[in-house]
Image 1 (cartoon, rainbow, N blue to C red):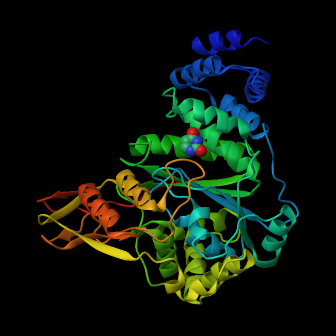
Image 2 (tube, rainbow, N blue to C red; image 1 turned 60 degrees about the horizontal axis):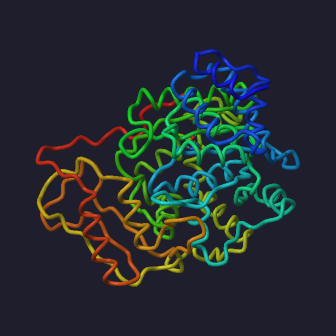
Length: 434
Ligand code: URA
């Protein structure tokens, strides 16, 4: 086979065969196909598209480029979730213990944060001593014993995606639905769960700007998941502002604990109830999302979801006392309120920039391997639709020194777009795709 022939075929709008796709991905992973040819292929796919069969073949070929995790030593239905990336997205910290308390098995691989987005592992490492370095046997045992374990991605999980994503990032070929679907689903399939729910973000802070684009992606992801033999569902959620109030590792853990305690009832709870009830229905635990929702509200009300978080933290070496006493989590020395310069209604909060403020405070990484400060970040005191009187606090900066706090406060003020006219609170969950 010749890569040039495949390029010409795709350039002319023809479909690549299963064998051609498998050959191309294997060759690229082994460095036998150079970046310049693969760049041209990504652009041809972006412009010409791929049909469903090609997208499935691409997903499976990428999945097979590295480790494929076999979760069969774990008893019961294994569930996983994926989000297309958000600022302040602490969903896994609430959702995973909640559904594990309801009886699903969570054997999850998560990532670390980079740039403006945070990672679940960094957030969990806010618990002193928490480690994700478990052996495979320990990982399986923890899930069998307590229903939940969260580890880092193995180095060899979908190596084809690591190379391809880096290439797409510098060749303008990220926003192609078949390329995004195969990138996300190859990693989810390689991670081995039976049930996969996806949170597809839509809006200014997401790469799917419109609901129509987000729906196309959500439908593509769930269709490919189902064709690969998984139970799959997706929600489309608004990303015109950060999710919830806290952005920064320990601050987000505190917010997650408040939700699991039943004290915080906003969009984060709503998202977790929606994703969680889809998981329970897809797993066959419930016949209707209404009964699944009741079950999940039950594990919050009786404290079992919060206890599950404590069990997870303890089983992975962390100080679980912090679940009951969040004051034991890392706490920043300085706090600064960001006062509104004028009165107005919050029209928009620039999510990506809020993520960058937290990163500059030391809460995120500019490059892989950088150390982070778990205590710092920001808490939003106003959200889209709220009215802020002049001088009222829009947000609170948590910083390790006063100079950094001042700078972050200025930047955070610039993230808020106010309007004189009243602003309706946006619908957070825009659609469910099953
Ligand atoms: N997230 C991924 O993992 N891959 C993409 O292509 C886009 C978002």
